[in-house]
Length: 147
Image (cartoon, rainbow, N blue to C red):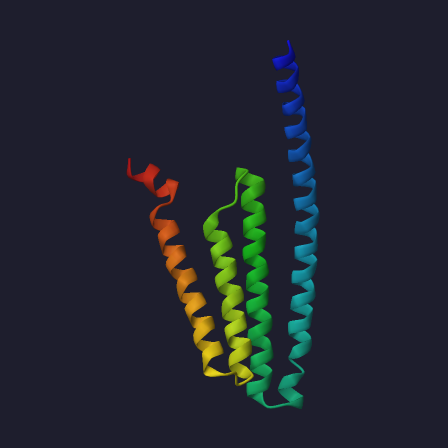
């Protein structure tokens, strides 16, 4: 009887936890979408740099803004994947990290950093790309398609 009570309490706790996580992820999704809308507005406002500064500076701002928006899209894919499948896909997390690191690389590139900083960021991006390839190769989905 005691064992049965523990199982039912654990099941109730697990169901409660899952519901709380889903509610929090829905709130996070709303916040991410609001951030995306804000990022789009900021990108449009940064178009003013085309008039007030050189074209290369304006393009720098737009590139950085748009890469940041791509990172938000990848985060949304991760959240939607979790809500749909109940798990997080490692490839989405690695994709997000790659996009963020590329954003850092571009931001640093425009600020004339030391060569060691650029090389370090390039190595991080390279390692993330290698991880991405490995994750795809050993993915359980890939193995299930082959059989």
